Length: 37
Image (cartoon, rainbow, N blue to C red; front, top):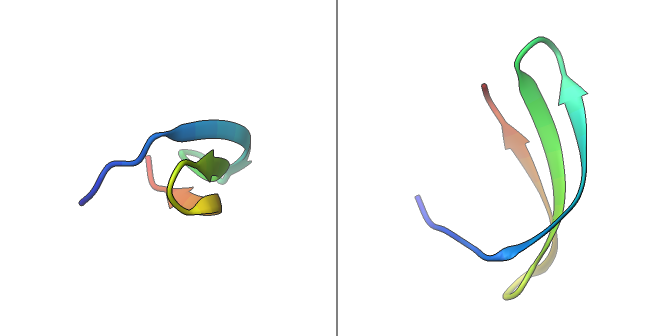
């Protein structure tokens, strides 16, 4: 697991506990992440 600094641009709730996150990170620019909750 690694850590990055960035700005949260938006998130979409996916099902009951999950989310799709769109962020802009310092090192890699625009990124999308799938978070399981």
